[in-house]
Image 1 (spheres, rainbow over the protein chains, first blue to last red):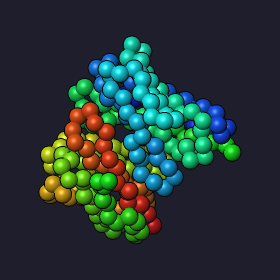
Image 2 (image 1 turned 135 degrees about the horizontal axis):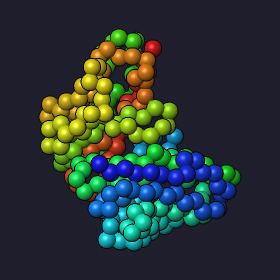
Image 3 (image 1 turned 180 degrees about the vertical axis):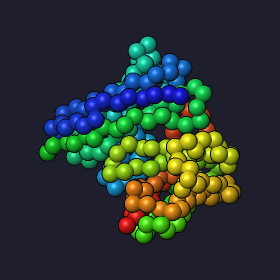
Image 4 (image 1 turned 120 degrees about the vertical axis):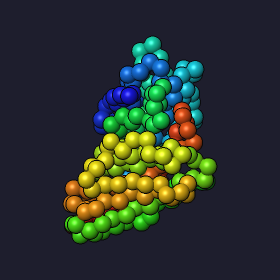
Length: 112
Length: 113
């Protein structure tokens, strides 16, 4: 099955700065890569996703980039705000799977 | 917004008791997943179903956990007997199929004392 690694495990940024989380995947045939945000005490929620036929996707202050050759994808958060503090999970859908494979998560803390 | 509904939201039980958690997937979703999360750690996949058929339950301790989907609107996760190490948040999620993100329920926070 697909194996996803996520770095860093924790990230502290000053409000207004950018945050970047990186994930690598093992199966070059994987073709769907969502990102989930989980606030404290809440459920994980899908915030953005990208498919293998696209290199970059943006939604307001968040963007995801995909490098298929290197088998990695990244989440970029610009102009961070306190409400961006959460755990972020990347995931990948392997070609022979009926499920997402999740990374271990990144705890992002935005300092005021 | 369509929601995945989980009940109960919170459960405190004594060691050795049976615990049943329920999940109502989003209407039309044909894939249902059970995850466990401890202290804001990662998401541990316990079991999942596609079109009500169990696809994989290798993540579950078989001696005490069981997962079923008696109909398309209900998935259950049972623990019998429960142990303190089972204390965690159990999430149900549902999806429409391959290569699409799925929606998580609000979770059941289980405490076994």
